[in-house]
Length: 312
Image 1 (cartoon, one colour):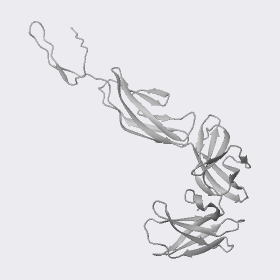
Image 2 (tube, rainbow, N blue to C red):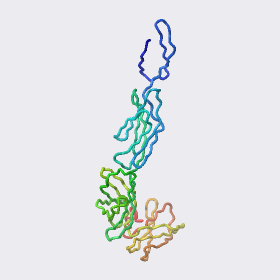
Image 3 (cartoon, rainbow, N blue to C red):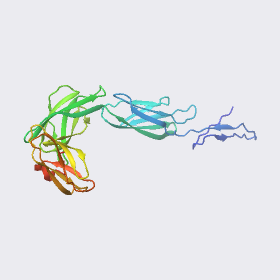
């Protein structure tokens, strides 16, 4: 009984091998199958499995019978080796945070590493909503009462260390780190914050956790102008009617409506007369013809800066 050992130098599947003896006799053909490094996985999918973990799955690549394929899973600095019988992977981050996680899966066998596939899975461990419950008008500053509603999707969350609230205009940001927490409930945290008058502020809250993770809330727009809002309720070819709303405690003054073209060049202005009412409707007529006209409702004291930072 003789044996022959061959070492393949390249991947050539279905290679026909015939052995010839020195006396001229030949054997029946034998087929030699050579397996190189595996190709990539297919049908790679991933999603957030539950409140704490993510899940990915795939179809294995082709391999010859009796030969195994392993998988190297990398998520950031975390790495895991899986054997050929596993075609899915569950990942539960140690430091939970809202972000996109990149999964890399590399196939490997005794011939070496094969191709790498990747997929990004979005993960949300905490949802934070910010909203205003009350506001008080002051001479120099306004006091706002906020609720920060925190919903934890996972129970394995480190302690909350600090909350900051930031409000920004187009030019400046007003940030506070010493917020007053008047409610001990973790899910609904009450904050009392002051912001300067005559500002329109895009405001959000940032939560800082003990493990260094930060989570940001939604962004809301708040106004510290006496003129809180104006709404276009009717329009014709040369006239418009608007509804004005002033904050309680303010004294409506004679304000102005500026009419600008598409390059913000002021082409006309109209005075409005509140008559000491906090909520009223006023119509303006004889509006000049034009395309893409913009209406700015401005407090008289801030007319010159109204276009760059309109109060309403």
